[in-house]
Every structure is written in C-alpha cells, then in structure tokens.
Image (cartoon, rainbow, N blue to C red; front, side, top):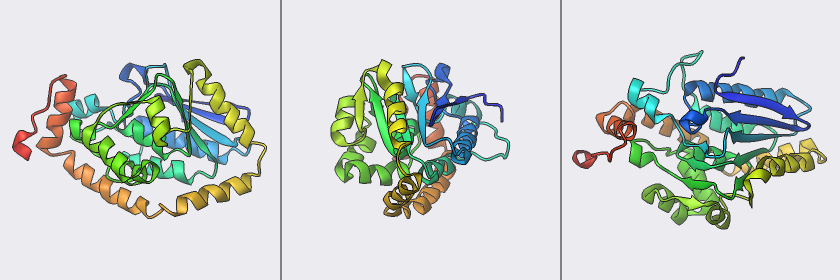
Length: 261
C-alpha cells in the first residue's frame, strides 16, 4: 500500500506510525484509518518490531478526531478500498496487536484523537499537549471505548466531566489524572518513546504479549458495546441534528441544537 495520509518507519525495534495531515490538524478521514490499519498489521507481522509508536506530523496537533469539515462537505469521511469506515476496528486492532503501543502526543488530542491515545497501552505527552473531547459540540460521540474504557482509566466522575463539559486539560493535568504516563519537552517526545520501546525490546516478547492480553481481558466485553455504539453513531450522523454540528464547525459558528432537546 502506498500511504497518502500517514508515514511508516522502522527505527531499530520501534515501528513509528505518523498521521501526516498537518493541514487538517491530523484529523482522520476514512483513508487515514484504512492506512493506519494496514500499518499496524505490518508492524504486527514484523518480528524485528517490538513496539509501535503512534504520533503525528508537526507540533500543533496529535489528532483532532474525525475530519468534520469533510463530513460537512460530503456527509461521510470519504472513500476506502473496501467502502467501509473502520474506526472501531482500528481501536480494536490497537488493543489486539501483541506488542506494546505507545502514543507520543505531540499537540492537541481531541475527539477521536483523544480516544486513540487512550486506547494505546502507554502515552507520552509533550509539555504543550492538550486533551479534550468534542463530540457533543459537533454532533458526534464515542459511546464505546471512547467512553467506557476512558472511565476505567480515569474513573467515572472524571470521564463524565471530560465528555459532558468538553473542557481542555493540560499535559500535566492529564498526567495527574492517569491519562498519560509521562510529560516531556517537545523535542524529547519521540526519543523518549523510542527509549521505552528499546527498553522493552530486551524483555520476553511472549511475556509482554500475555501481559497485554491479561490487561485487556477485563474490558474485552467493551468491544461488543463499541460496535453497538458505532452502529448508533452511523445512524445518528445522518440526522439533521448531527449535520448541524458538522456544518457549524465548518462554518466556525455556534451550533443551534435547541430544537432537538
């Protein structure tokens, strides 16, 4: 596969998947998701890869979630080779790949981008990174891993605060809440992530694989709920209420949801 929206590199034991849509603040469209799926499977199959780093181009944004501008323009996230937008499948793949996945958060992580880093096994954030949810503001939601697993990570009250109030949080606040493991200067972000992979490369890959499966076992049932939530979002996204959120975002105005209460 020739990548348009991401880059894939292997540096020693680390595979680095970089979302490369800085002009859209690394928002993902269906093509982006398809390419990330391919890259994660590529890392899975490479016996020389001991860990995967997920990051993004530039230092402004890690990922701001789905490309709402495209959704406002076309009503969807664009075409793929198989005709499917497989966002939930990507989340499940990050959990299933038998190698640790590290999110190197190089800027804003919001919406679906926030979910991506939460799903990863470990997260390192640059000092200037910020974290937030945005779904209810733009006519969207992630009632699967984005809500359920988040609650396991930070607790019910914090998760509800993140989703209901849609406030932004600093990297240091995210660390204090357990959302990220480490905060570093931006120039140290990728080296720090690679250092972690190099450290784990000296450990038993079978032991790490079983440990990852053990950690996931407690929340594995959430995968079924995530698929149910995805089906609900697919239905909701076609409604006037959802499109009002997308149009308002594209037009840089406040959405009018009053009549949908």
